[in-house]
Structures are given as structure tokens and as C-alpha cells.
Image 1 (cartoon, rainbow, N blue to C red):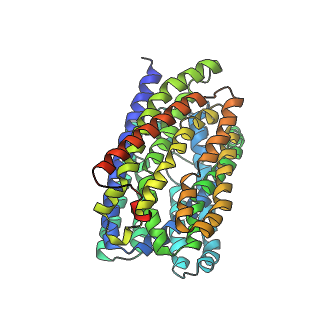
Image 2 (image 1 turned 120 degrees about the vertical axis):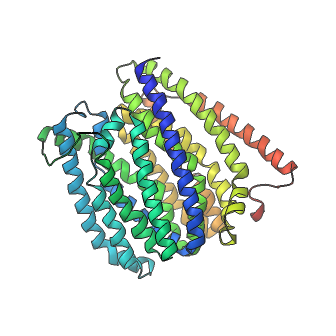
Image 3 (image 1 turned 135 degrees about the vertical axis):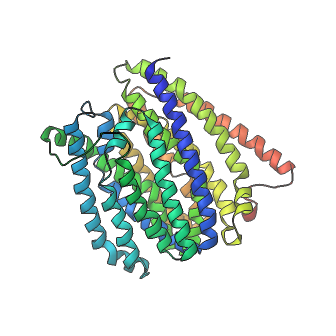
Length: 447
């Protein structure tokens, strides 16, 4: 077994452990928070956090990806220049949040956003000061330390939120306790990742040129990625009440667990692994990708089938009646995650070979589907139509991505058809077993 293969397998294991532990912590804390706080607070935070992510992604210069993929990624001059660029960007973001505060509050007709928006935006300004050590570890596929870092900062943030919500059950437990102080914890802990590793202000013109060349497409790609993945919350916030949006946020967060796992594997493991094999002929690279991808697709097909057939029972058991509508939303949303799995197991290949434009085009197609289709689906079929359209929003990504894979001789459509057939077969079997046991179907509430 090659050293790269060992690192990739070890990285995949650490990524799954990290995300699994992270979701257990988040799930447990969300259960507690839903009993301490009203659904309206989660709806408000969904809007503000979506805005924060959007602004961050629309200003994404691809610094982490540049450090991972650039030949100078271990050069101190390159790293310190990247760190300096991140700080400048973060301070500009903090000022931008102040500018948009009043228009956001007016648009959603909620004066609480006058304070919540700039306070949450402060986290973006703070986070820009994190050390580049985390990207260096990612480049080296040393994900054990990154796992410890992520879990440490998450535990500190969750404890802060829970204690705050218990003592003072207000929106600020989520806004300041969870988001702003979470950024402070991340900055402080990042400087302990690698002993003797430090950053200082620097401006290497060649490094700036390299980052800008890579980042110009990442800027566009990250922007449309946000539009595709987060536009649903912004649109639903206008169509629905904050209370219903809060229920949708709970359902979506549970349904998106497999999606986030594959995204983590895609970015933390698949991308750097393929980046280290670009010297191979395209046919050999494709063969390696297909052989490893097969195992991932089988695992996720079984996982998704289990979640679709049992997710509503978990929600009904753990959440109170205020979140009952999430029981039918979750299985529908979870079905659409399969297109995400197909997409994220191959899109890193196009990014690794220096073709981020395909990723941007894919996400643009997904965004247009949501932006144009969501209001129409809601007006004609109500909340059911809206949830169904959101569930299939990654289908356009997958279709457009297929074109890029075909152009770059990395096409794997036969493998996709076989794995999709496996998913359908396993899901049908589990639903028959469930129905025979008297539990009905996962969407029984709306039938």
C-alpha cells in the first residue's frame, strides 16, 4: 500500500470520525436548544447565518485551496502572504455587514436584525485571523490534528450556547454565544496546531499572483455554490413565517447529514488525494477514481435508504409537537441527497486538474433551479412543492458536472446508474419491511 493511499484512507477515517462526532454533539445540543428556545429564533439565525455564508463565499479568494494545491504551499512567504490576504478580506467583510444591516432588517420587517446582523458579521472579521496551520495540515493529509481542532472549538462553542440559553433563553445565545465566540475559539486554538508554526504580515508578489489566478474562478464558483445551497432559506424566509422556517431548518439539518459527510470527504480527502496524482495519464486517473468511488457509493446508498425509511420516526421520538411537520419534510429532503453524493464524489477531480469553472457552472444551474422554481412550486403546490423542489436542487449540478467529466475524459455514468439502482432496491426493501410492521410510510402525515 503506497504512502499516499495510507494517508488517504487514514484521512477518510478521521474525516468520518470528525463529522460523526461533530453531528452527535450538534444533534444533542440542538435537542436541548429546541426545548430552551422557541422555533422563531432558529428561523432568524437561519437567515442571518445564510447571509453570512453568502457574503463570505462571494468574497472567497480560494486561499485554503491554493495552499493545498499550489507547489509553493509549504513556502513561508506564500503562507504569510495568504494569511495577510485573509485578514484584509475579513476586515472588509466586517465593514460590509454594517452597511447591509438596515436594508436586511427592512426587507424582512424585523427590527431584531438591526443588532443581530452586525454582531454575527463580527464573527467573519474575527475568523480571518486564524492561522494557516490548518491548511498546511490539510495539504499534508494530517487530519487527526484537524479533527481535534474542529471538535475542541465546537465543544467550547456548544457549551457556551447551552449555558447562555439556560441562563437567558434569548436569540443572543445563538448569535453571540454560538457564532461570535465560536470564531474566537477557532482563532485561539488554530495557533496551537503545529508547534513552532507562526504567521506574520507579508506580501510576496508572486504568491499574490498565484492566489489571484486560482482565486478568480474560485470566487465565482464559491459564490454560485452559496446561491445553490443557501438560497432556499432566503427565499423561504420571505414565503413562510420564521416559525415554519425554523421547523424546516431542523428537518433540513438532519436530512443534510449524509450530504455534509460527502462534502467533507470531497474537500478534505478526495481533493488533496487526486491533486497528488495529477502526473498519471487521464485513463489511469479515471480508473483509480472509479475503483475507490465504488465503495463510497455503496456505503452512501445504504445509509440514505436507512435515513429515508426511519428519519421521521427519530424526529417524532426526540422533538416536541412544535416540530411535527419536520417528520414528512426530512425523508423527502433526504432522497435528494443522492444527487449530492454522485456530484461530490467526482467534482473534486475537476477542481484538482485546475477546472473550477465546471464547478461554478454546475452550481449556477442549481441556483437557477431554486431561484426560479421555488416561488412557482410554492404558489402551485404549497409547502410540499417547495420542499420537493429543494430536495432535487442538486440534480442540475450533477447533470452539468457530467458534461465537464466527459470533456476531461473522467466520465463514469455507468457506475452512477448501477449505484442508483442499488439505492432504489435497498430503499424499496426497507419501506416494505416498515409498512409490514405497521409504521406506514415516512410521509404518512401528508397522504
